[in-house]
Length: 257
Image (tube, rainbow, N blue to C red; front, top):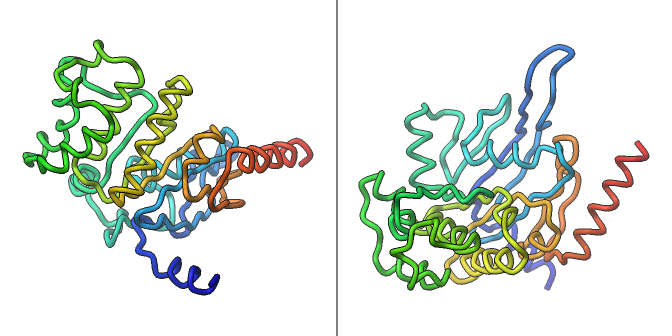
């Protein structure tokens, strides 16, 4: 039985892949190695959380894989596309067409309604949204009766739901979330995580999320742990308690080393 699972796991399509990824800031004595030859696959239709202590390189890893930051060595692929070979304009187009983003700050435009914020990336690209898909996404995040409201008329949780819908609306190949529940109370945070979880389970979406919260990480299929710019562990089918124990172990190791 295990062998079958293993076989199906190894043949799973890869949405994004980093190979030997390094990111170095500065040089000489002031040099900081933010990522040290990291190799990791993010499987299609799976929810992966990236965790680690402050300064471990988790946000840097996500930003490099998402094409938001340059890297010093190694390679990154989104689907079949090698990011290092793209010019700035091509990279911008790739981010717009294939990637969805959800940030801690909701990054909504205050002058636009919720619906206009959701469709903005497609409007900029000159693409018409798929009406059926858009309706399904708006229904899933529970915003049907809030579409004409501007961000100031929405709670923090509702604003982040708009951001989730915006990330999903263009049917990206992969969604990156950078502490997407960091500014939310626990109830709103749980709602947003539930929507991301459902988008993976029901819509086949791929989600990669950086978080410091073990409860948030427990919504993922898999957690990878970074320390000092390298992947040091991973956990499948995580629980909040299991993640917390693993994080405590890293902290203890950090204090004794």
